[in-house]
Image (cartoon, rainbow, N blue to C red):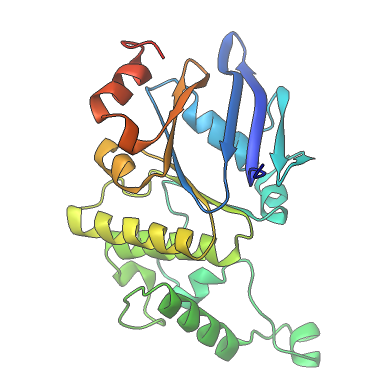
Length: 251
């Protein structure tokens, strides 16, 4: 039996009298894109925050490759190869693409220049960034142009590529196509597929049902703080998925 890359059993998270997660389960299998959908207040964001280390659940257990882990911060999640692209992108507009890709993980020059004088190995970072973006077939005019000169879709692409470059196990994306036009959304969805095809599974949260049905291998439907069901796009239509999501249809 295949072991999930990341899974959760019985996650509970309470905020005073509000229960955001009520025994939530989740699993992501190797090499798949899994979408999480749900109505407002269903606990989607709380589930993702738990899986990405942004919050610690009150109860339940998270597993990475079958091993129980405790994620107290996003740095803990990174140590387990989990990278997250948040809706606000967290890119630095004034920095160029290379600087953004290596932000917080800069490569220092070998020897004394790097260890003592803390000089950056800009040539190596440019080469690595160029090779990586080329591998993803990410079209860009120049790797040294400022991110603020890019379109919304290109900025999202930089944020996605940065996470995928350093993730070892999974990339989590929160609303990756929000506020993007049709062409730019298509570019980001294509980038997500390329990341999956390179062997890195992806979790996406999205309100855009056509995008979910276009890209997801499986769809996790969250309702009232727990997993209502998991469906495959080819086995259910969009209206039935929405009905389950809102409680109009029982599973």
